Every structure is written in structure tokens, then in C-alpha cells.
Image 1 (cartoon, rainbow, N blue to C red):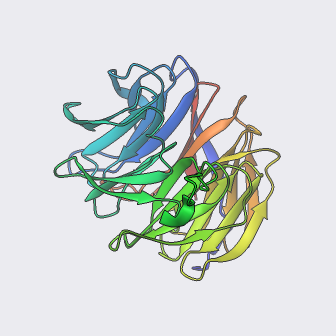
Image 2: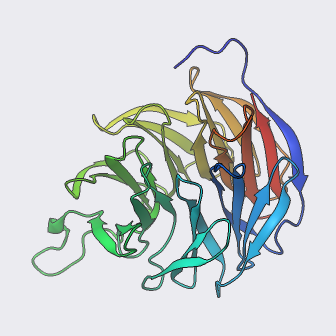
Length: 329
């Protein structure tokens, strides 16, 4: 980890109350393009997706089209394409700037949960919920290139009894080099796949409650972070299968984890209503933000880039219908 001259910290910039008319379950940043800065994309139980601009969180656009609550949003690394997944079993892929629908991906009921585009932008990985798998959608054809199963083929016994333990796939994360995909489950185990070979490499153990969020390090493809209902954040080495450390501090479920662009910090959101900042050189929480009145579903660092943009930003969204924007320095 690079040495920081001063203590890192978050400072509140803006709280936007009633950003949606219901709980906000999803958030991500669409990276800056040549023609505009990064936009914050949020998805809500109110069935809409909204795009927000700048430190004032000015509403750029509201997207409708889903018939049920929006549970996940993801943005392509180019910044021009994004996707929203809903409880209606559809994933809508759209042009960030024009809102044109580029593709509608249909899945069986409860088989589209959290999703993430790979760093190269070639694939969209979708956690497959009850299918106990992750699906990789090709971003050129918008067809499924591969289905990565969490359970090894031998999990079905001779008598046809499912031994996968009802592994419900909740979240996915790509490694920096796009060679590894991690997929977390309701039972707390995390599958790590070799994407090129379409093969389950191994399963990371240590959590025994749902892992609702995963994030790879932004500087090291071996390092994966997980957030669990067991109140802990784990740091794993995905190649050696090792649990590097377990970090505690939240008083309840940890619902979201994200890594700062420089790789030096983690942010987490929890059902204890707080956002925490963790210094990875100390592997400890250094700050707790208490701006929310209900559980914090997502924390997301703004990706670097954009004209004259040096400052770090962190956004959080909550069941209290608000968006919080923080300066990260």
C-alpha cells in the first residue's frame, strides 16, 4: 500500500432527501466520458433509475420501464452504457446519455441479482440468484456466453438430491485483470472462477451468513473484499484461498463494500445505519458517518477521470430514500 502523508477522511458534501419515493437499493457511477463528468446512477424500490450530476446531485434524468423494484445497477467502463436489474426478472441495458434501450435481458424469476461489467467491457456478469450460478452476457451480442455454476458438477448425488445447499447467488465482482470472477452466496461461501477456462477454481470460506457485496482491490487482482450479515468484512487472497484478515466494527449486517480508486481505503455500508471508512494500511475503521436514518444499501467510490476532476467522492444510498455524497481525501 502506498504511504499516505496524512490521515484519510470523509467529509459530507451533500445529503439529498427523498431522492426517490421509496427505498434506494442500488447505486453505481457511470464513468466520465469526453463530453461529460461521471454520473451517479441509482435504482429504487419505486421502480425507477435516476442519473445525478455533480456535487449538487442535480437530477439529469429519470428512467422508467421496470415493473417492480430495481435491485441492481451497473455501468460499462466506457461510461456510455449502463444496466438496471429489477425484481421483474428483466435486465435493461441502456445508453447513459440518450436513454435508448440497447437490450432487454430476460431471466427466470429471482435469477438476476447484483451485476458488474468486466474491466474491459466485454462481459456483464449477473449473479444468478436461485440458479446458483453467475451468467456472463456478451456486451456485443447480448447473449449468454457462459454460465458459471457455484456448485461443482458432483453436487447432485446419485439419488438426485441437491447437495448444493441451496446456494443462492447474491453478488459478483471482477478482478482488476478480468481473469477472475467472484460470486457470493446466501450461505456465506464465495466461489472464485477462472473466467477464461469457465472453471470453478475454489470456494472461499469464513462467512456463515449471507455475503451481499464483493469488491476486488483496485490495485491488486489477488485481493478480494467481502461484506457479510455476520457484521464482518473479510479480505481474501483469491489465488492462495487464504483469509488475510477479518475486520469488525459494524453493529449489524454489512450490506456493501467498495474500494477507493487508489486502493488505500475501503468504504462499507450497514444495516446499523452507518457508513464506515477503513484504512487498509491499518486494516481498521478510521471513521464512521451517521447521516442516515435507515440501513445503507450501497457505498460507491467515484471512478477517477474527467476534465479537471482530482477530488475523491463517495456516494451512499439508503432505505431512508436519501443519497449522501462525501469528499474522500
